[in-house]
Length: 470
Image (tube, rainbow, N blue to C red; front, top):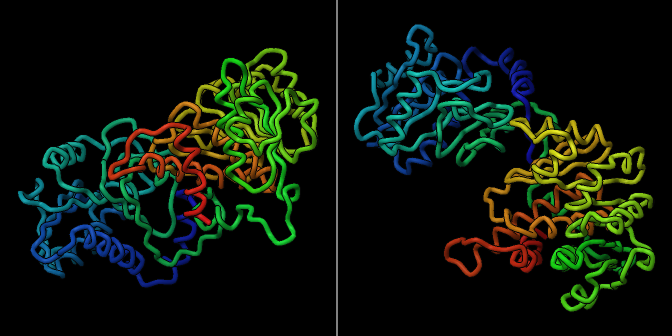
């Protein structure tokens, strides 16, 4: 499990270490880890040239110490001091003592630049002098390694409002921060410096977390005990939504899927194992409902949504169901069974009254708390917030899932996991992880390069994605 911590949580965890260690020891520990990461990026250290861009805070000290360690291994090392009067004195003395030199501009033939301008306490865009340095770095095409976070990028949201650093690699210490999910950080490397950080904060599923929770049939299971997923999706206008959503539920678990709606024949032509009926009145008992993809917003669709929300089983609401719910939020008021909403940005705006801003975590939390439901805000970084509870992030690392019908597939996966008994947050987090993996596999098939894919392709690769996880 990945954990993302606030800047204050990191500072609080550093405090006892700073008090117990000799002066400067924690900085040198972090800088050594930074130097190791830079050495990996360089490949060969001896004979290479590194240039540290040094701010006035501890990140500047980290950069100077890392350059010092690299200088001792045979690299040429230079440093641009943005604020010489406030440069970390001990780190600068070590740097100069090792043969490093201070310069006004990046030396010719520099192989790598260390961004040590600001750290987790900084805010706002790069100041003009730093912006000019990194503009020259960008024009020269020199790779940048950022210390803790790219300077000029907000630590809480990953947002930028002016000049900022665009690193190839970001090396951070002790724990990940939200910027490492939302910001343009390049490859992120985490260095363990001995912080005692409790599990918690914002969470992110990895393959092992999804595997530990994904329902796998045991020796005494049958099709009913593994969860029966009900799907109300599709219409005469959008029958494909029913096919995609139902197919995803079929692929996600080994239980049973019941379809209720006007696209029964299309669903059965693709998935003959599904039990299909023309409406919810004859659908039979289910352990969770998925309502909304391609359903329409007429009275029949509204009746289907009302029926599902009046049951005592988990309900996932997506697409057209969200449009209905935005007009009638009272439908989820005081609902005791779990409810999961899966809006994209436009649907979120209808539900919340405004589009998600730069702080997507705070906005998603606010909507989840207000409605008393779990909210999954779609995006390259998916945000999942439980009411008054946990928050999960899923960093796709690519945008292949940004294609029509992809959300229908995600809804079917989540619904199947809800029917199997997973909690709403964990069902959404595990499904988002598998969905992104399937999109990546689909884009890479047949290879060698990834190319645009489709919702049908993502669904076709879902079982392969699960095989790679389980």
